Every structure is written in C-alpha cells, then in structure tokens.
Length: 169
Ligand SMILES: CC(C)(COP(=O)(O)OP(=O)(O)OC[C@H]1O[C@@H](n2cnc3c(N)ncnc32)[C@H](O)[C@@H]1OP(=O)(O)O)[C@@H](O)C(=O)NCCC(=O)NCCS
Image (tube, rainbow, N blue to C red):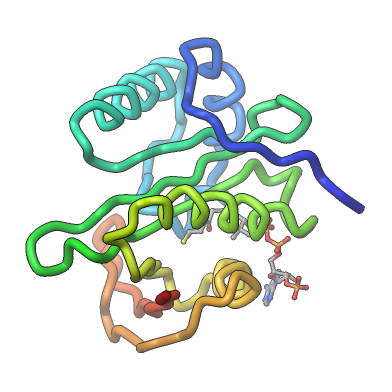
C-alpha cells in the first residue's frame, strides 16, 4: 500500500480535525501534551503557537496530510548554543491511522526539511521507554538507540524512563 503523505504548515481551517484526533487519551499517553478534553480552543491556540514559532525560530511544526486530509503533526526544534548542530523531533497521528507505516514516511519527509540546513548534522528524539511503536518508527528511519535515560521524563507527576535515539550525517 502506498500513501500520499505530505507535510505543510498548519492553517486556521485545521482546528476541527486537529481537535478531533488530539482529544484522545491513547494519542496523548506518550506525549508531553496533556489536555483532556482537547477542545477547538486548544487546537486554535496550538495553530497560533505554530505560526508564532514559524516566525520566531522556535519549534517548527508541520501538518501531516494524507490525500490532503490533516491526520497529524511532526515538528523539529533546532537546539541552541553548543548544541546548535542538533535538532529534536516529535510527532503524532490520529489513532485511526496507526500501524499503517505512515509515520516513518512523515519522519523521512521532515528529515529532508531539517537537513536542508547545512549546519544540522544530528537529529534526535527522546521517547517514553514504554513507547515501542515510536521506537520502531525511529529505527525504520535509520535512527540509532544511544541511551536509556532512567527517570528521564515526568508527566502528570509520574516519572518514566526514556530512550534516546539519534541520526547523524
Ligand atoms: C507512535 C506512532 C507515531 C507510530 O506511528 P505509525 O504510523 O503507527 O507507525 P508504524 O505504522 O510504522 O508502526 C509502528 C511500528 O511499531 C510496531 N508496533 C506497534 N505496536 C507495537 C507494540 N505494542 N510493541 C512493539 N511494536 C509495536 C508496528 O508493528 C510497527 O513496526 P513494524 O513496521 O516493524 O511492524 C503513532 O502510534 C502515534 O502517533 N502515537 C501517538 C503519539 C506518540 O506516541 N508519538 C510519539 C511520541 S515520541
């Protein structure tokens, strides 16, 4: 099966679709995002945030589309100071699209965007250790597991181990 996956910037019209798939406990389980219920206003705020970051140079967020329908988000953040050659990534898609091999396509697309910046030679992701599907996505995109970060993440007051994956060029 081939999927017509594209990345683009978020638009104001994305609020409804975004609020629908983000309003899901399973989707948010291994994200730092923690907003249930996730409302239209939350989606509107997020889109405003993506536009602000696009201009200010913070987290660069891209809508993932399947046949032009919004299904998720993938983002990167260039680090600062002596880590300025690195970018972190994060990603999610709506539950009905899981386990179809879609996210590896989106991650490969964002890698192409990130590596257009010649000074970036390292891309990394720090994921919840329990998030095996996310680890597979990274492995399928050529990331290497670099470390196990004991008690690396805290979410809603609960501490979790984390795993660090990176891709270098
Ligand atoms: C994690 C997520 C991005 C995966 O995206 P996806 O498009 O479903 O990825 P894939 O279809 O490539 O499937 C993931 C891989 O994990 C495997 N997998 C799925 N469930 C698994 C499990 N419980 N244990 C081990 N492997 C699992 C799949 O079999 C697949 O590997 P394979 O192709 O070798 O068979 C998606 O589930 C998601 O958006 N989750 C919610 C948000 C999230 O957790 N984001 C990551 C934060 S770092």
